[in-house]
Image (tube, rainbow, N blue to C red; front, side, top):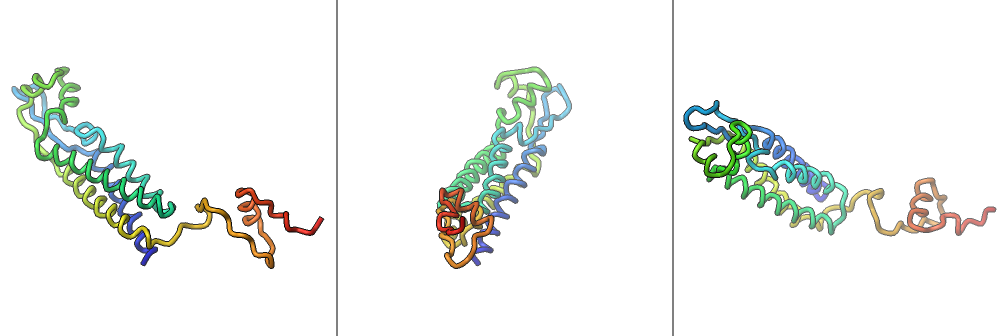
Length: 200
């Protein structure tokens, strides 16, 4: 169960980040301009919410790292996942609920050359939503649940593989020969693997 818990957390975290990145690259908003000044403008998630892509990429990195870190970092990464989910989820809700001019201002400026919140607000006739902001919200809900799951269950996960451990290497058995990996591990921890060897 402990191994399954780690695997589930890693998969869901990576999936949340990947879906978030996908959503951010798609069109979130369509902007109709007053007086037919231009065709409707398509505003991508990266333009409507600039932090969406960096935060989702951070989630991807968290998911990968979660598969190898020790107990303390599991809690740290779980907490970071919760914070990112709350922040990005809240900002997405703001875009969905209020459709602020700030979310489309850059796209309108690029299309028309007009700058300033008031002139842009006067130029914008309507702003409509696509499905992609809601996809981002679903991804953030999954990430939030996963982060909480990590915080609750991380203590019961099995330790990561030997090659990722940073604690002291176990003392080699006196009855068995050291192989090349054991000797290298001893050297990396400051121990001379030949110290107890009587051979000259």
